[in-house]
Image (cartoon, rainbow, N blue to C red; front, side, top):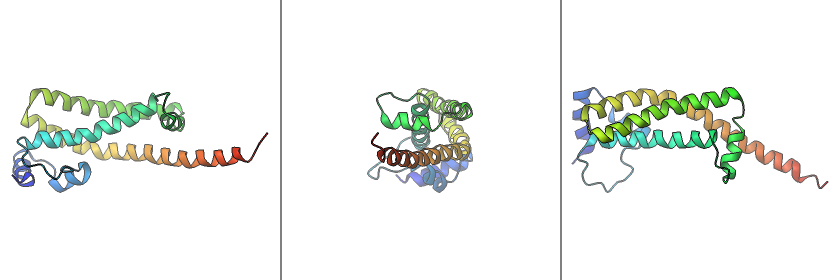
Length: 158
């Protein structure tokens, strides 16, 4: 079975995004030994959902850090303004709507619903990506600041 060919036939039927574009964003076939995928759109919806769920988990760990995780606590500190937290919560709310819609589709097993999900979530992904990039850049910058603060503290032995 050629998943790409089967998808392209379904893409024409449902006016879906280009396979290569989806693959670039969501790494559709990260497992190379798959012999058969019976429900191509369901599989692709789940791959999209995997990435959305990953981002939701990251955002949740910032908004409500695990007190046993030094990483969570440090990264949560770099989003300490009320505006940052509201922005994170709004993004989490939007992404959770996508994630939970995928959950409903897992229960219903509806090809047309999968197609609608793929179209809608692919369009939303570009704005999600911009927000996730903002988060990642802020966390990255924060870690270099933490290192500089530690160097500064290590100079004093008082």
